[in-house]
Image 1 (cartoon, one colour):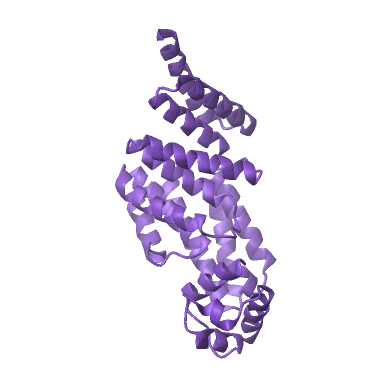
Image 2: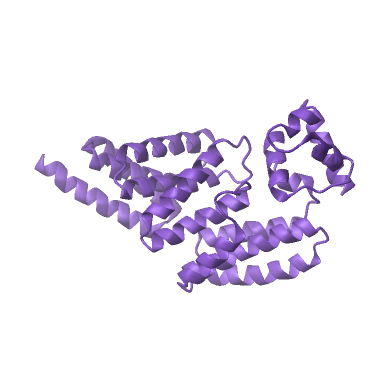
Length: 290
């Protein structure tokens, strides 16, 4: 525990903060003092808040494990490409590596990561929505959500609600976690904001909150361009096309659909490409009638 305390002390001093300043709105001064002296390990929620104030990822406080990071990256990759057979195999390897971790905290967090992806398999591969939702609810709730992992888990929870066509509950989740992400100065995964933001905009669209949805889309578009990302760019342009069409801005809608088609073509995303082409064809029919 003393190494953890030394790291907190190092990052605190690097930021030019006193113990009192670091503890403000997080915990009492003595908790930080005992943590830095290696005499106390605070709750995970407190450690998350400390890391947010220090603008460092939580993993910076714990021993780096290259194997764990590699497996997490593979989980993310296979989830994105919807290669669920490969994801199952990776999770088997994750369970083996988890048992070899020496840090109790690291083992607990990695198990949480594994259970999250198990729920994704139940949702996407086996269509067992209730089982998937029960796992996710056991991992985190909206009130104590602090880490990127927690936000990812809640993002998946919202997707299950959308699968139930329960847009209201999904919207209640996304508006909270989107606000939380925007207040964080450091994101280990830069795709988190566009992923959550797109789901929020989608909920707003389905609830006919078109102006609010368009505002979120513009925020995400700015973020993507500022951070030189392409993740979710096609989906955002497609959503802007749908919103502009609803508002009667057909020229802007056509431009957005065409941008989405270009990106989906480059990404070889056939499903979304066909959807964007179909929506553009419907728009062209409207344009002929005007």
